[in-house]
Image 1 (cartoon, rainbow, N blue to C red):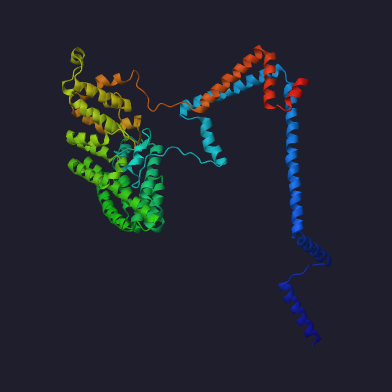
Image 2 (cartoon, rainbow, N blue to C red; image 1 turned 180 degrees about the horizontal axis):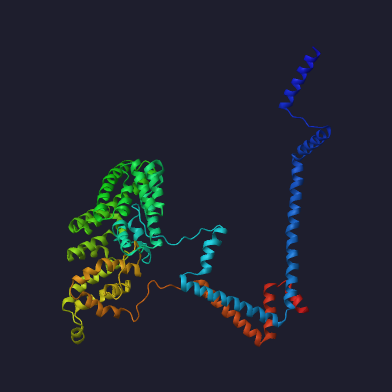
Length: 536
Protein backbone atom coordinates (compact mmCIF):
# COMPACT_ATOMS: atom_id res chain seq x y z
CA UNK A 1 0.00 0.00 0.00
CA UNK A 2 2.84 2.36 0.88
CA UNK A 3 4.42 1.80 -2.51
CA UNK A 4 1.15 2.32 -4.20
CA UNK A 5 0.55 5.56 -2.32
CA UNK A 6 4.05 6.78 -3.07
CA UNK A 7 3.66 5.91 -6.66
CA UNK A 8 0.38 7.72 -6.90
CA UNK A 9 1.87 10.75 -5.20
CA UNK A 10 4.77 10.74 -7.59
CA UNK A 11 2.40 10.53 -10.51
CA UNK A 12 0.43 13.50 -9.23
CA UNK A 13 3.67 15.47 -8.83
CA UNK A 14 4.59 14.58 -12.37
CA UNK A 15 1.23 15.83 -13.60
CA UNK A 16 1.61 19.05 -11.66
CA UNK A 17 5.10 19.51 -13.04
CA UNK A 18 3.74 19.13 -16.55
CA UNK A 19 1.30 22.02 -16.08
CA UNK A 20 3.24 24.45 -13.83
CA UNK A 21 7.00 24.42 -14.11
CA UNK A 22 8.76 25.68 -10.99
CA UNK A 23 12.30 27.10 -10.63
CA UNK A 24 15.00 24.45 -10.91
CA UNK A 25 16.86 25.54 -7.70
CA UNK A 26 16.34 27.78 -4.61
CA UNK A 27 18.76 30.50 -5.90
CA UNK A 28 16.92 30.80 -9.12
CA UNK A 29 13.63 30.95 -7.24
CA UNK A 30 14.86 33.90 -5.17
CA UNK A 31 16.07 35.79 -8.26
CA UNK A 32 12.74 35.11 -9.95
CA UNK A 33 10.85 36.58 -6.99
CA UNK A 34 13.04 39.72 -6.96
CA UNK A 35 12.48 40.24 -10.72
CA UNK A 36 8.72 39.99 -10.23
CA UNK A 37 8.85 42.60 -7.46
CA UNK A 38 10.88 45.03 -9.60
CA UNK A 39 8.52 44.54 -12.53
CA UNK A 40 5.48 45.31 -10.38
CA UNK A 41 7.15 48.44 -8.95
CA UNK A 42 8.15 49.65 -12.42
CA UNK A 43 4.53 49.39 -13.49
CA UNK A 44 3.47 52.07 -10.97
CA UNK A 45 2.86 55.66 -12.25
CA UNK A 46 5.65 57.29 -10.21
CA UNK A 47 8.23 54.82 -11.52
CA UNK A 48 7.18 55.57 -15.12
CA UNK A 49 7.53 59.29 -14.40
CA UNK A 50 11.10 58.83 -13.13
CA UNK A 51 11.99 56.85 -16.25
CA UNK A 52 10.57 59.59 -18.49
CA UNK A 53 12.57 62.27 -16.62
CA UNK A 54 15.76 60.22 -16.97
CA UNK A 55 15.18 59.72 -20.68
CA UNK A 56 14.56 63.46 -21.15
CA UNK A 57 17.78 64.36 -19.33
CA UNK A 58 19.73 61.90 -21.47
CA UNK A 59 18.26 63.37 -24.66
CA UNK A 60 19.02 66.93 -23.50
CA UNK A 61 22.62 65.93 -22.78
CA UNK A 62 22.98 64.45 -26.23
CA UNK A 63 21.47 67.54 -27.89
CA UNK A 64 23.81 69.88 -26.01
CA UNK A 65 26.87 67.67 -26.43
CA UNK A 66 26.71 67.26 -30.22
CA UNK A 67 27.03 71.01 -31.08
CA UNK A 68 29.99 71.29 -28.72
CA UNK A 69 31.77 68.45 -30.49
CA UNK A 70 30.81 69.86 -33.88
CA UNK A 71 32.20 73.25 -32.95
CA UNK A 72 35.46 71.69 -31.78
CA UNK A 73 35.66 69.74 -35.04
CA UNK A 74 35.06 72.85 -37.13
CA UNK A 75 37.71 74.72 -35.19
CA UNK A 76 40.22 71.91 -35.82
CA UNK A 77 39.41 71.89 -39.53
CA UNK A 78 39.76 75.67 -39.69
CA UNK A 79 43.17 75.54 -37.98
CA UNK A 80 44.32 72.89 -40.45
CA UNK A 81 43.15 74.84 -43.49
CA UNK A 82 44.64 78.11 -42.22
CA UNK A 83 48.11 76.56 -42.07
CA UNK A 84 48.09 75.39 -45.69
CA UNK A 85 50.51 77.00 -48.12
CA UNK A 86 49.75 78.42 -51.60
CA UNK A 87 51.45 75.38 -53.15
CA UNK A 88 48.79 73.14 -51.62
CA UNK A 89 45.97 75.25 -53.06
CA UNK A 90 47.66 75.21 -56.47
CA UNK A 91 48.06 71.41 -56.38
CA UNK A 92 44.47 71.03 -55.21
CA UNK A 93 43.00 73.14 -58.02
CA UNK A 94 45.21 71.50 -60.68
CA UNK A 95 44.19 68.02 -59.51
CA UNK A 96 40.52 69.02 -59.43
CA UNK A 97 40.74 70.45 -62.94
CA UNK A 98 42.51 67.34 -64.24
CA UNK A 99 39.98 64.90 -62.72
CA UNK A 100 36.97 66.91 -63.87
CA UNK A 101 38.55 67.14 -67.33
CA UNK A 102 38.89 63.36 -67.49
CA UNK A 103 35.25 62.97 -66.44
CA UNK A 104 34.22 65.50 -69.10
CA UNK A 105 36.13 63.66 -71.85
CA UNK A 106 34.66 60.31 -70.81
CA UNK A 107 31.14 61.77 -70.64
CA UNK A 108 31.55 63.27 -74.13
CA UNK A 109 32.87 59.99 -75.55
CA UNK A 110 30.01 58.00 -73.97
CA UNK A 111 27.42 60.45 -75.29
CA UNK A 112 28.86 60.39 -78.82
CA UNK A 113 28.93 56.57 -78.89
CA UNK A 114 25.76 55.63 -76.98
CA UNK A 115 23.68 58.82 -77.02
CA UNK A 116 23.26 58.98 -73.24
CA UNK A 117 25.05 60.43 -70.24
CA UNK A 118 27.00 57.80 -68.28
CA UNK A 119 26.57 59.57 -64.94
CA UNK A 120 22.86 60.05 -65.52
CA UNK A 121 22.44 56.43 -66.61
CA UNK A 122 24.24 55.11 -63.53
CA UNK A 123 22.34 57.39 -61.17
CA UNK A 124 18.97 56.43 -62.64
CA UNK A 125 19.66 52.70 -62.96
CA UNK A 126 21.56 52.03 -59.73
CA UNK A 127 21.49 54.91 -57.27
CA UNK A 128 17.83 55.92 -57.44
CA UNK A 129 16.49 52.46 -56.47
CA UNK A 130 18.88 52.43 -53.48
CA UNK A 131 17.46 55.69 -52.12
CA UNK A 132 13.89 54.59 -52.68
CA UNK A 133 13.12 56.48 -55.88
CA UNK A 134 11.19 55.05 -58.80
CA UNK A 135 13.40 53.78 -61.52
CA UNK A 136 12.85 55.45 -64.84
CA UNK A 137 12.38 52.85 -67.50
CA UNK A 138 13.19 53.67 -71.13
CA UNK A 139 10.31 54.72 -73.24
CA UNK A 140 8.20 51.83 -74.20
CA UNK A 141 7.00 51.34 -77.71
CA UNK A 142 3.63 52.70 -78.58
CA UNK A 143 1.53 49.60 -77.96
CA UNK A 144 -2.04 50.71 -77.49
CA UNK A 145 -4.97 48.80 -76.12
CA UNK A 146 -8.63 49.12 -76.83
CA UNK A 147 -9.28 51.04 -73.63
CA UNK A 148 -7.30 54.10 -74.65
CA UNK A 149 -8.99 57.07 -76.27
CA UNK A 150 -8.17 59.73 -78.82
CA UNK A 151 -6.87 62.16 -76.18
CA UNK A 152 -4.02 59.79 -75.32
CA UNK A 153 -3.09 59.69 -79.01
CA UNK A 154 -2.96 63.48 -79.23
CA UNK A 155 -0.64 63.61 -76.24
CA UNK A 156 1.83 61.09 -77.68
CA UNK A 157 5.17 62.62 -78.68
CA UNK A 158 6.07 62.35 -82.37
CA UNK A 159 9.61 61.15 -81.72
CA UNK A 160 8.73 57.76 -80.29
CA UNK A 161 9.06 54.11 -81.13
CA UNK A 162 5.84 52.95 -82.79
CA UNK A 163 4.75 49.60 -84.11
CA UNK A 164 5.05 49.55 -87.89
CA UNK A 165 1.44 49.50 -89.17
CA UNK A 166 2.55 47.64 -92.32
CA UNK A 167 4.87 45.17 -90.62
CA UNK A 168 5.54 41.95 -92.50
CA UNK A 169 4.69 38.40 -91.44
CA UNK A 170 7.53 36.61 -89.68
CA UNK A 171 6.94 33.15 -91.08
CA UNK A 172 5.76 34.04 -94.57
CA UNK A 173 8.06 37.00 -95.31
CA UNK A 174 10.86 37.64 -92.81
CA UNK A 175 11.77 33.92 -92.56
CA UNK A 176 11.89 33.56 -96.34
CA UNK A 177 14.49 36.32 -96.45
CA UNK A 178 16.55 34.48 -93.85
CA UNK A 179 16.30 31.19 -95.79
CA UNK A 180 17.58 32.88 -98.95
CA UNK A 181 20.28 35.15 -97.52
CA UNK A 182 21.17 33.43 -94.26
CA UNK A 183 20.88 36.78 -92.48
CA UNK A 184 18.56 37.74 -89.63
CA UNK A 185 16.05 40.30 -90.92
CA UNK A 186 15.14 41.60 -87.44
CA UNK A 187 17.27 42.84 -84.59
CA UNK A 188 16.99 41.43 -81.08
CA UNK A 189 15.81 44.84 -79.86
CA UNK A 190 12.99 44.87 -82.42
CA UNK A 191 11.86 41.34 -81.53
CA UNK A 192 12.00 42.18 -77.83
CA UNK A 193 9.68 45.14 -78.40
CA UNK A 194 7.31 42.86 -80.31
CA UNK A 195 7.31 40.42 -77.39
CA UNK A 196 6.31 43.28 -75.09
CA UNK A 197 3.55 44.25 -77.52
CA UNK A 198 2.22 40.70 -77.63
CA UNK A 199 2.13 40.46 -73.85
CA UNK A 200 0.32 43.79 -73.66
CA UNK A 201 -2.18 42.97 -76.39
CA UNK A 202 -2.87 39.29 -75.88
CA UNK A 203 -2.71 38.68 -72.13
CA UNK A 204 -4.71 39.81 -69.08
CA UNK A 205 -5.01 39.12 -65.35
CA UNK A 206 -7.66 36.41 -65.75
CA UNK A 207 -5.50 34.18 -67.98
CA UNK A 208 -4.59 32.07 -64.94
CA UNK A 209 -8.20 30.86 -64.83
CA UNK A 210 -7.91 29.24 -68.28
CA UNK A 211 -5.17 26.64 -68.89
CA UNK A 212 -4.85 27.47 -72.60
CA UNK A 213 -4.32 31.17 -71.92
CA UNK A 214 -1.81 30.31 -69.20
CA UNK A 215 0.20 28.35 -71.77
CA UNK A 216 -0.01 31.27 -74.23
CA UNK A 217 1.24 33.68 -71.56
CA UNK A 218 4.43 31.64 -71.41
CA UNK A 219 4.53 31.32 -75.20
CA UNK A 220 4.64 35.09 -75.75
CA UNK A 221 7.64 35.30 -73.42
CA UNK A 222 9.60 32.54 -75.16
CA UNK A 223 12.63 33.64 -77.19
CA UNK A 224 12.91 30.47 -79.28
CA UNK A 225 10.40 30.49 -82.20
CA UNK A 226 10.04 26.71 -82.15
CA UNK A 227 9.22 26.79 -78.44
CA UNK A 228 6.54 29.41 -79.11
CA UNK A 229 4.99 27.31 -81.89
CA UNK A 230 5.06 24.19 -79.70
CA UNK A 231 3.34 26.09 -76.89
CA UNK A 232 0.65 27.29 -79.32
CA UNK A 233 -0.15 23.70 -80.28
CA UNK A 234 -0.29 22.76 -76.59
CA UNK A 235 -2.80 25.57 -76.01
CA UNK A 236 -4.95 24.29 -78.89
CA UNK A 237 -4.92 20.80 -77.37
CA UNK A 238 -6.32 22.31 -74.19
CA UNK A 239 -8.79 24.57 -75.99
CA UNK A 240 -9.48 24.32 -79.69
CA UNK A 241 -10.96 27.85 -79.64
CA UNK A 242 -7.83 29.61 -78.36
CA UNK A 243 -7.67 32.61 -80.71
CA UNK A 244 -4.21 33.80 -79.63
CA UNK A 245 -2.72 30.39 -80.45
CA UNK A 246 -4.00 30.68 -84.02
CA UNK A 247 -2.54 34.20 -84.17
CA UNK A 248 0.91 32.95 -83.18
CA UNK A 249 0.77 30.12 -85.73
CA UNK A 250 -0.34 32.53 -88.46
CA UNK A 251 2.50 34.92 -87.70
CA UNK A 252 5.34 32.47 -87.21
CA UNK A 253 4.58 28.96 -88.53
CA UNK A 254 2.75 29.78 -91.78
CA UNK A 255 5.28 29.93 -94.62
CA UNK A 256 2.94 31.57 -97.14
CA UNK A 257 0.36 34.33 -96.97
CA UNK A 258 -2.33 31.80 -97.94
CA UNK A 259 -1.48 29.62 -94.93
CA UNK A 260 -1.38 32.68 -92.68
CA UNK A 261 -4.82 33.72 -93.88
CA UNK A 262 -6.23 30.26 -93.03
CA UNK A 263 -4.92 30.51 -89.48
CA UNK A 264 -6.26 34.04 -89.11
CA UNK A 265 -9.71 32.94 -90.27
CA UNK A 266 -9.71 30.30 -87.52
CA UNK A 267 -8.56 32.96 -85.08
CA UNK A 268 -11.37 35.26 -86.23
CA UNK A 269 -14.00 32.58 -85.64
CA UNK A 270 -12.71 31.85 -82.13
CA UNK A 271 -12.07 35.52 -81.34
CA UNK A 272 -15.60 36.65 -82.25
CA UNK A 273 -17.12 33.98 -80.03
CA UNK A 274 -14.93 34.93 -77.07
CA UNK A 275 -15.55 38.64 -77.70
CA UNK A 276 -19.34 38.18 -77.53
CA UNK A 277 -19.02 36.31 -74.23
CA UNK A 278 -16.82 39.07 -72.79
CA UNK A 279 -19.31 41.75 -73.86
CA UNK A 280 -22.08 40.05 -71.90
CA UNK A 281 -20.19 39.97 -68.60
CA UNK A 282 -17.67 42.83 -68.80
CA UNK A 283 -19.52 44.94 -66.20
CA UNK A 284 -19.37 42.31 -63.48
CA UNK A 285 -15.87 43.13 -62.21
CA UNK A 286 -12.64 44.96 -63.18
CA UNK A 287 -11.14 41.59 -64.16
CA UNK A 288 -13.94 41.05 -66.69
CA UNK A 289 -13.32 44.55 -68.10
CA UNK A 290 -9.64 43.73 -68.54
CA UNK A 291 -10.61 40.51 -70.30
CA UNK A 292 -12.91 42.44 -72.65
CA UNK A 293 -10.06 44.82 -73.54
CA UNK A 294 -7.81 41.87 -74.28
CA UNK A 295 -10.47 40.15 -76.41
CA UNK A 296 -11.08 43.41 -78.28
CA UNK A 297 -7.36 43.72 -78.98
CA UNK A 298 -7.25 40.18 -80.35
CA UNK A 299 -10.29 40.74 -82.58
CA UNK A 300 -8.97 44.03 -83.99
CA UNK A 301 -5.52 42.54 -84.60
CA UNK A 302 -6.94 39.52 -86.42
CA UNK A 303 -9.25 41.59 -88.65
CA UNK A 304 -6.43 43.94 -89.54
CA UNK A 305 -4.06 41.12 -90.45
CA UNK A 306 -6.78 39.46 -92.52
CA UNK A 307 -7.18 42.72 -94.46
CA UNK A 308 -3.40 42.82 -94.97
CA UNK A 309 -3.50 39.23 -96.24
CA UNK A 310 -6.18 40.18 -98.75
CA UNK A 311 -4.04 43.16 -99.85
CA UNK A 312 -0.96 40.98 -100.35
CA UNK A 313 -2.95 38.36 -102.27
CA UNK A 314 -4.27 40.98 -104.71
CA UNK A 315 -7.83 41.26 -103.36
CA UNK A 316 -7.38 44.97 -102.83
CA UNK A 317 -11.01 46.09 -102.89
CA UNK A 318 -11.87 43.43 -100.34
CA UNK A 319 -8.99 44.66 -98.19
CA UNK A 320 -10.20 48.28 -98.43
CA UNK A 321 -13.71 47.23 -97.37
CA UNK A 322 -12.38 45.26 -94.40
CA UNK A 323 -10.25 48.21 -93.27
CA UNK A 324 -13.15 50.68 -93.58
CA UNK A 325 -15.47 48.33 -91.65
CA UNK A 326 -12.85 47.91 -88.93
CA UNK A 327 -12.39 51.67 -88.57
CA UNK A 328 -16.17 52.15 -88.31
CA UNK A 329 -16.60 49.33 -85.79
CA UNK A 330 -13.79 50.59 -83.54
CA UNK A 331 -13.52 54.36 -84.18
CA UNK A 332 -11.51 54.99 -81.00
CA UNK A 333 -8.67 52.79 -82.21
CA UNK A 334 -7.28 55.30 -84.69
CA UNK A 335 -4.06 55.28 -82.63
CA UNK A 336 -3.37 51.89 -84.19
CA UNK A 337 -2.83 53.73 -87.51
CA UNK A 338 -5.13 51.48 -89.53
CA UNK A 339 -5.66 54.46 -91.82
CA UNK A 340 -2.07 54.04 -93.05
CA UNK A 341 -2.94 50.55 -94.27
CA UNK A 342 -6.01 52.05 -95.95
CA UNK A 343 -3.96 54.81 -97.62
CA UNK A 344 -1.54 52.30 -99.13
CA UNK A 345 -4.36 50.09 -100.45
CA UNK A 346 -6.20 53.08 -101.96
CA UNK A 347 -3.01 54.24 -103.67
CA UNK A 348 -2.67 50.79 -105.18
CA UNK A 349 -6.22 51.17 -106.56
CA UNK A 350 -5.24 54.68 -107.76
CA UNK A 351 -8.35 55.95 -105.97
CA UNK A 352 -6.80 59.37 -105.38
CA UNK A 353 -10.06 61.07 -104.43
CA UNK A 354 -10.56 58.52 -101.63
CA UNK A 355 -6.94 59.04 -100.57
CA UNK A 356 -7.58 62.77 -100.31
CA UNK A 357 -10.69 62.10 -98.18
CA UNK A 358 -8.67 59.97 -95.74
CA UNK A 359 -5.95 62.63 -95.56
CA UNK A 360 -8.55 65.32 -94.84
CA UNK A 361 -9.55 63.38 -91.73
CA UNK A 362 -6.15 62.37 -90.41
CA UNK A 363 -3.81 65.11 -91.68
CA UNK A 364 -4.79 67.24 -88.69
CA UNK A 365 -2.51 69.42 -86.58
CA UNK A 366 -3.92 67.93 -83.37
CA UNK A 367 -2.93 64.40 -84.38
CA UNK A 368 0.59 62.94 -84.59
CA UNK A 369 2.03 63.05 -88.08
CA UNK A 370 3.72 60.24 -89.92
CA UNK A 371 5.79 59.88 -93.06
CA UNK A 372 2.87 58.12 -94.73
CA UNK A 373 0.55 61.10 -94.16
CA UNK A 374 3.07 63.83 -95.02
CA UNK A 375 4.52 62.21 -98.13
CA UNK A 376 1.15 60.99 -99.42
CA UNK A 377 -0.13 64.57 -99.17
CA UNK A 378 2.95 65.71 -101.09
CA UNK A 379 2.41 62.98 -103.69
CA UNK A 380 -1.15 64.13 -104.38
CA UNK A 381 0.01 67.74 -104.78
CA UNK A 382 2.87 66.64 -107.03
CA UNK A 383 0.48 64.53 -109.13
CA UNK A 384 -1.34 67.68 -110.25
CA UNK A 385 1.80 69.28 -111.77
CA UNK A 386 4.56 66.67 -112.08
CA UNK A 387 3.70 65.47 -115.60
CA UNK A 388 4.31 68.92 -117.09
CA UNK A 389 6.98 70.11 -114.66
CA UNK A 390 10.35 71.14 -116.05
CA UNK A 391 13.09 72.80 -114.00
CA UNK A 392 14.28 74.87 -116.99
CA UNK A 393 10.79 76.13 -117.77
CA UNK A 394 10.07 76.88 -114.14
CA UNK A 395 13.30 78.87 -113.78
CA UNK A 396 12.32 81.04 -116.75
CA UNK A 397 8.65 81.74 -116.08
CA UNK A 398 8.55 81.07 -112.34
CA UNK A 399 6.43 78.60 -110.44
CA UNK A 400 2.68 78.50 -110.81
CA UNK A 401 0.37 78.40 -107.81
CA UNK A 402 -0.12 74.63 -108.12
CA UNK A 403 3.62 74.10 -108.42
CA UNK A 404 4.27 76.28 -105.38
CA UNK A 405 1.74 74.21 -103.40
CA UNK A 406 3.43 71.00 -104.53
CA UNK A 407 6.90 72.25 -103.62
CA UNK A 408 5.69 73.46 -100.21
CA UNK A 409 4.06 70.09 -99.56
CA UNK A 410 7.33 68.33 -100.41
CA UNK A 411 9.24 70.69 -98.13
CA UNK A 412 6.82 70.02 -95.25
CA UNK A 413 7.24 66.28 -95.76
CA UNK A 414 11.04 66.55 -95.88
CA UNK A 415 11.03 68.69 -92.75
CA UNK A 416 9.08 65.97 -90.98
CA UNK A 417 11.39 63.15 -92.10
CA UNK A 418 14.45 64.13 -94.16
CA UNK A 419 15.56 60.51 -94.64
CA UNK A 420 12.75 59.48 -96.99
CA UNK A 421 13.86 61.17 -100.28
CA UNK A 422 17.13 59.24 -100.54
CA UNK A 423 15.19 55.97 -100.39
CA UNK A 424 12.53 57.12 -102.83
CA UNK A 425 15.19 58.39 -105.25
CA UNK A 426 17.11 55.11 -104.73
CA UNK A 427 20.19 56.93 -103.55
CA UNK A 428 20.21 54.48 -100.64
CA UNK A 429 19.40 50.79 -100.96
CA UNK A 430 16.24 49.46 -99.35
CA UNK A 431 16.14 46.67 -96.78
CA UNK A 432 13.21 44.86 -95.20
CA UNK A 433 11.30 47.23 -92.90
CA UNK A 434 11.48 46.55 -89.15
CA UNK A 435 8.54 45.66 -86.94
CA UNK A 436 8.99 48.96 -85.04
CA UNK A 437 9.87 52.39 -86.34
CA UNK A 438 11.10 55.63 -84.87
CA UNK A 439 8.93 58.49 -86.01
CA UNK A 440 10.92 60.97 -88.09
CA UNK A 441 13.85 58.54 -88.12
CA UNK A 442 15.60 56.39 -90.69
CA UNK A 443 13.58 53.29 -89.80
CA UNK A 444 10.33 55.08 -90.63
CA UNK A 445 11.85 56.18 -93.95
CA UNK A 446 12.74 52.58 -94.81
CA UNK A 447 9.25 51.36 -93.91
CA UNK A 448 7.54 54.10 -95.95
CA UNK A 449 9.71 53.74 -99.05
CA UNK A 450 9.47 49.92 -98.98
CA UNK A 451 5.69 50.06 -99.53
CA UNK A 452 5.20 53.43 -101.29
CA UNK A 453 8.05 53.65 -103.79
CA UNK A 454 5.89 51.92 -106.39
CA UNK A 455 3.16 54.57 -105.96
CA UNK A 456 5.65 57.40 -106.60
CA UNK A 457 6.97 55.61 -109.68
CA UNK A 458 3.43 55.15 -111.02
CA UNK A 459 2.84 58.92 -111.19
CA UNK A 460 4.90 60.28 -114.05
CA UNK A 461 7.30 63.05 -113.06
CA UNK A 462 6.64 62.77 -109.29
CA UNK A 463 10.14 61.52 -108.46
CA UNK A 464 11.64 64.11 -110.81
CA UNK A 465 9.82 66.88 -108.96
CA UNK A 466 10.98 65.43 -105.64
CA UNK A 467 14.56 65.25 -106.92
CA UNK A 468 14.50 68.89 -108.08
CA UNK A 469 13.02 70.37 -104.93
CA UNK A 470 13.72 68.30 -101.80
CA UNK A 471 17.29 69.51 -101.22
CA UNK A 472 16.07 73.09 -101.07
CA UNK A 473 14.40 72.34 -97.74
CA UNK A 474 17.70 72.41 -95.86
CA UNK A 475 21.19 73.64 -96.59
CA UNK A 476 22.26 70.44 -94.86
CA UNK A 477 19.89 67.54 -94.30
CA UNK A 478 19.08 67.44 -90.63
CA UNK A 479 19.35 64.37 -88.47
CA UNK A 480 16.15 64.07 -86.48
CA UNK A 481 15.81 63.95 -83.55
CA UNK A 482 18.72 66.22 -82.70
CA UNK A 483 20.13 65.13 -79.36
CA UNK A 484 20.74 67.79 -76.75
CA UNK A 485 23.88 67.61 -74.66
CA UNK A 486 23.16 66.06 -71.25
CA UNK A 487 23.35 68.18 -68.11
CA UNK A 488 26.44 66.41 -66.77
CA UNK A 489 28.50 67.29 -69.85
CA UNK A 490 27.77 70.97 -69.23
CA UNK A 491 28.40 70.50 -65.52
CA UNK A 492 31.76 68.72 -65.88
CA UNK A 493 32.88 71.18 -68.56
CA UNK A 494 32.04 74.09 -66.26
CA UNK A 495 33.72 72.42 -63.28
CA UNK A 496 36.86 71.72 -65.31
CA UNK A 497 37.01 75.32 -66.58
CA UNK A 498 36.40 76.77 -63.12
CA UNK A 499 39.07 74.56 -61.51
CA UNK A 500 41.56 75.43 -64.25
CA UNK A 501 40.88 79.13 -63.73
CA UNK A 502 41.43 78.78 -59.97
CA UNK A 503 44.66 76.89 -60.61
CA UNK A 504 45.90 79.63 -62.94
CA UNK A 505 45.01 82.38 -60.48
CA UNK A 506 46.66 80.48 -57.60
CA UNK A 507 49.83 80.10 -59.65
CA UNK A 508 49.94 83.76 -60.67
CA UNK A 509 48.70 85.34 -57.42
CA UNK A 510 49.39 82.87 -54.58
CA UNK A 511 49.12 85.32 -51.66
CA UNK A 512 45.91 86.87 -52.98
CA UNK A 513 44.31 83.43 -53.42
CA UNK A 514 45.27 82.43 -49.86
CA UNK A 515 43.47 85.53 -48.60
CA UNK A 516 40.50 84.59 -50.76
CA UNK A 517 40.49 81.05 -49.32
CA UNK A 518 40.54 82.42 -45.76
CA UNK A 519 37.65 84.73 -46.64
CA UNK A 520 35.71 81.71 -47.84
CA UNK A 521 36.45 80.01 -44.54
CA UNK A 522 35.03 83.00 -42.67
CA UNK A 523 31.82 82.64 -44.68
CA UNK A 524 31.57 78.90 -44.09
CA UNK A 525 32.49 78.91 -40.37
CA UNK A 526 31.66 82.38 -39.04
CA UNK A 527 31.80 81.27 -35.36
CA UNK A 528 35.19 79.66 -35.03
CA UNK A 529 37.03 80.96 -38.09
CA UNK A 530 37.71 84.63 -37.16
CA UNK A 531 39.69 83.99 -34.03
CA UNK A 532 41.74 81.20 -35.54
CA UNK A 533 42.41 83.05 -38.77
CA UNK A 534 43.37 86.18 -36.86
CA UNK A 535 45.93 84.24 -34.85
CA UNK A 536 47.39 82.77 -38.03
